[in-house]
Image (cartoon, rainbow, N blue to C red; front, side, top):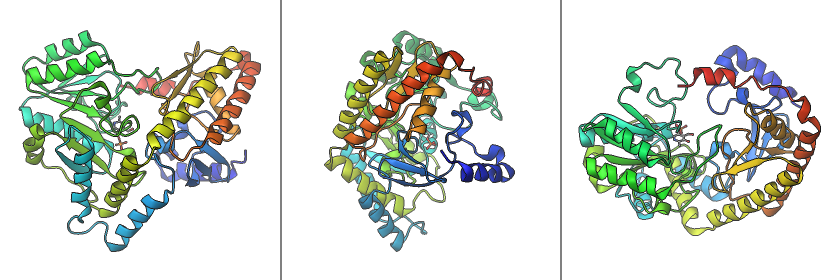
Amino acid sequence: MNNKIDLELRARAKAVIPNGMYGHESVGLLPDGYPQFFAKADGAYIWDVDGNRYLDFMCAYGPNLLGYKHEKINAAYIDQLSRGDAMTGPSPMLVELAENFVGMVSHADWAMFAKNGTDVTSMAMVIARAHTGKKKIVLAKGAYHGAAPWCTPIKNGVTEEDRANQIFYDYNDVASLEAAVNEAGDDLAAIFGSPFKHDAFVDQEMPNPAYARRARELCDAKGALLVVDDVRAGFRLARDCSWSLVGVQPDLSAWGKLIANGHPISALLGSEKAREAAGSIYVTGSYWFAGAAMAAAVATLKEIRETDYLEHTVKLGTKLRNGLAELAAASGFGLRQTGPVQMPLFLFDDDADFRKGYFWSAELLKHGVYVHPWHNMFLCAAMKDEDIDLALRAAKEGFAALKQHQGALERIGKLDALQAAHV
Ligand SMILES: Cc1ncc(COP(=O)(O)O)c(C=O)c1O
């Protein structure tokens, strides 16, 4: 795999960007050989700056739902862009998009839009406090809600005060949730829940309906708001809020990533109960009301309503899961595949420092398949049957190479710094 241009860009980046790259798309914690810079993307594929093509199971870490460079979505974006994007006031798309969301998401009576997931998870926290006049937020341990001081997983630069008034529970554990709510006493503003447990580095877990129901009951009993952070999983599991699948309606849900198939916009949806508080806080941003991403979101929601994107990704994800399970068993590896098939995570048994996962993922990359060794992945609607065949052929080569080299694998030290800085 040629990587000359990538290496040149990394060297230039190092001079003018801290660490050469930052945030979740930095390849600093990925196996050697993963390209940092990409030249283009189309459908289910990405091309790095050196021209290598990969079947992309990261989907931009979530925004790519329907396929990169989707014609209808991009046409809607460009059409609005040609008329007006960031203006002195919003375009009619603001109202149309809010109507679309309220029509599709059963708990929602209103919508507000921002740019990033963190914007709307933070808004949810503030609205819950405004609604209740209480301070404490109960959150699942290890759940990701964004990169603001109150929720970033890296503690550098974060003060104790930024993290005050947070109480943690173990996801899916009713007793632990009850204990956290107890600890909040009469000062509970909100319980946050992820649609399913999709934390990095550990097996994913689907929500236990008893846990989700208990969260709803406890919020009702205390007058607190229930928040579902659907930024990563929204519309990947259901054409409604993800907890509709367990029969629980939150008061607030946070959305982002895929809602405009990659164009920059996020959404906070809320029930009638939270409307007044939502109207009482001050939140805004220079680009929050720009029309082009809203037009792209309207077009994306139409595709979500009218196509079989969901069933298609479940079908392909099932084929991938079954195929990988067979290959892993045939080569004698314990491969844990967790979470929904359309948002899989692969972790190897007996692989505490991820050395097997790193090696296997890097082998797949050499065969043109981009997978992640410790973060959940995503299928997109542009993937086809033959793409899954390609992934399975690459995985077979990966298992064979791993079998051959497993005795000689070295410890992965890259993650040590992360663990040390973790909150
Ligand atoms: C569940 C969840 N919440 C919030 C966020 C933050 O979104 P953003 O990176 O757009 O601020 C993410 C991003 O990965 C996420 O997965």
